[in-house]
Structures are given as C-alpha cells and as structure tokens.
Length: 234
Image 1 (cartoon, helix red, strand yellow):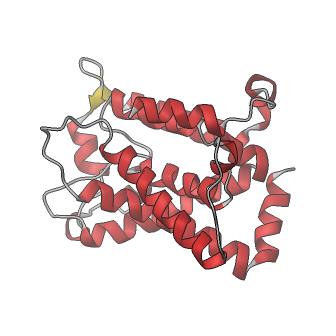
Image 2: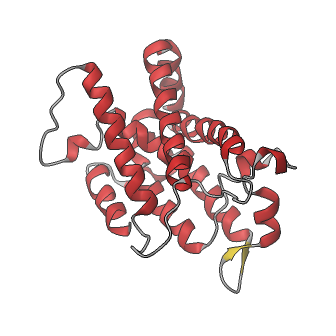
Image 3: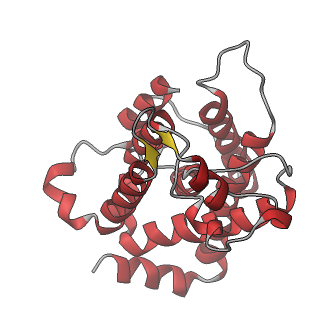
C-alpha cells in the first residue's frame, strides 16, 4: 500500500511545480488537508490514536435505518478510524495536488464534496446493518478518477497505453481505475486476513461517482465545467 502511494507521488507530482512556492495558492488542498487532519486528531483517543467510540457511533456512516444524525453523511467522510488510516489518506491526498494546480480550488472541492455526499447516501441503503463506515477515501478516489480520465497518470509512465477509439478509451479508464481502487483497498492487508467485498464496493462507488460527475460536466455541461475551472483559478 505504502509502496503504491509513493509510486503515485513519483509519477503524478509535477517536478516543475514547486509545492512550497505554490502552497499559499492551493486553497482547496490546504482547506481539505487541515479539515481531515485536525478533525480526525481532535476526536482520537490520545492513548491509542484511534477514533473515540462515541464519535464512531454518532458520526460514522450506518445503514439508513440507524441514521440519527443527517450531518453524518458528510462528517463520516472527514473522520478516520485511527492514525494509520489517517496517514494513508493524507499521503494519497498529496498525490492529488496536481488537480488543483491544473483546474483550480473550486474544481478540487466540488469533486471531493459532491461525490462524497452522493456515495454516503447510496451506501447508507446498501451498507450491512452491522457495519459502520469512516474515512475520506471515497472523496479522494473521486479526485483520483479525474487523474485517470485526463491521462495525468499515464503521461508520466515510461510506456504508452494504446487507445483505438473513444469507447475503448472510456472502458480502459474504468478498468484501470477499478484496478487502482482494488490495490488501494486491499494492498496493505496480510494474505491471511479476512477480506470483505464491502470496502472495495464502497471505494469503487466513490471513484465511479467522481468519474461520472466529471463526464456529465465535461461532455454534457461544458459551459459550467469551464466556468468552474475559470472561477477556481482566480
């Protein structure tokens, strides 16, 4: 898992852009990074750096029949189970800075917040009653899907991926996106661990929701798509 994240940082980050020189221009990145970091740390138990049980039960994503606080649909996307969970997502988050550098802060926030909310609402109807979800992975994978769609990952690879037509381009993007989702979901688990299909399903839904929103805006609502980018670059 960590090796994959460092690989993504190596191939995605643009060395010609100084992160430190542009840190004050990355409004969306800084805002979300601080929200994820501070909100998670604030609700951690100091003895083991894991989420407090009361917060986990109150703000985690539950089956809709057990949801008592509708703000949980968003809050569950910014809290984390423990420090390792938070660290992995913050490292993954760093891989995505190029999106704001290319498309602006508004684009960055929209493609984190809206797919996160949509995914949470859908998952609340299909999540098993005995499970609870937490973490920013769905929003981050939504952002990552834009990197796949715009070939910002493939442009850095030492080989070319052939595309025969637009349909094949779309299909290959979906396959590669789901492959990355699978590795990011299960890459850190030991071979002997019990593997549930639910995390992959939830993460895939987040990634595909972001990918779908991107296709709708870019191809069906191009004027709005361009306006979001233009406004976010100011």
